Length: 130
Image (tube, one colour):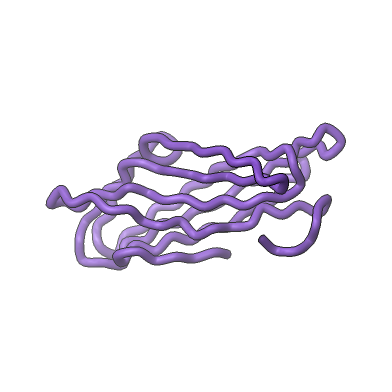
């Protein structure tokens, strides 16, 4: 698992290689990732936007931006958490993802929360960690 905390917002990510959805002979590799966002601070915050930077094993970069996560813009009171699962395909057997969430406090202050870089590893590629 990968963890990072920004302004009392803790983000935990666990990537999982999906062998049953992947087809290595077609250069198609798929991962799911489980994300937990915990508000460990004193302010209520809402997740407004997401940003992902996905890099495959050949260094090709894909950037993804959008409103919320999995169709939601969750509001987290102090002590609350939100969990979701998503996924990504790659044309290579490994890669790395990193990102951020744009949050807003109940008072209207916006800030970025870092999502830790996490390694996408399959049993078909180089076994070293990214």
